Picture (cartoon, rainbow, N blue to C red):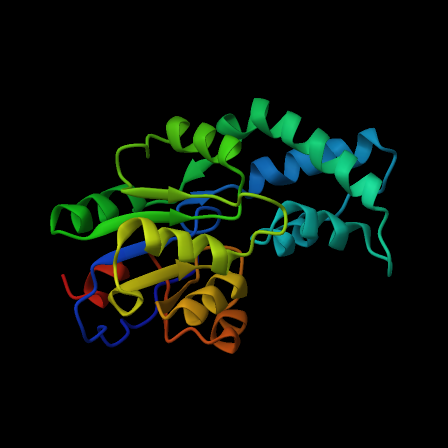
Length: 228
């Protein structure tokens, strides 16, 4: 885990809704994703990507990540589809045993919820795998809203837009905590405060370049950042 940075200046204004990415912010899903991707690449007779390469594709929809791993100017759409289907089969069976909640997440979010904040997950994962992990990790009762990708083309901006619509919060009264540039750009697109999380899979440079107005090194810093 990244060493905590000096606490950023607290956000000024009445934040009501805290939206968080799932992979890389709430849960450490890298071991499960890496294992299952390695299996399907082996099964299809393809070179197994390096762990750091797999780490770099976590965040966007899986189809985009698999296409990136295959490389080439025009990846085979049928092969991508087959790899994704086989990955999800393995992931449904193995993910709960290979995934952990990041340290401090549950106590910090429980404390924030007790002080009146509403909590949401905004993830590019499909609902089936999200439900498995939320239940297995003991997170089901912690979040007011859980919004997942509805299709491979569903962007994080669309996911976060649905979260805001479900909650009814004004975008300026919400934050989006994410570890990749897609999360930060989605927050900026809808008007939420973009907060970068350094304990996930993106770098400080990636988050700042994407437009993060605040970057935190551990989940506990969120408490002082939002003012409670």
